[in-house]
Length: 82
Image (tube, rainbow, N blue to C red):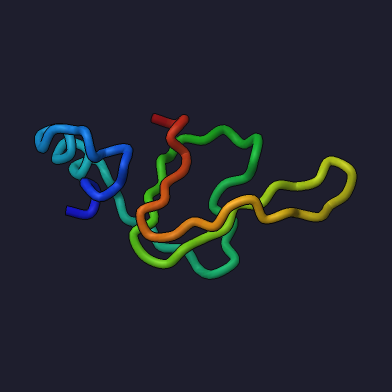
């Protein structure tokens, strides 16, 4: 299935993947929604199933943000929360 195509899950047994599937909850976000901010305490692990997103980093010297990554289907973030 979808999770087995994601590298972090590819080496797991079917039982381990099924356990994770039972714990997942689907969330949807509108364009432009900030899902997570650098420095915030993370308590969720996100996997992009559809659509995409961008990761930005705020400059220390100004309020401008720089794009550092583009996330697409199968991308994940927040693994520290695990």
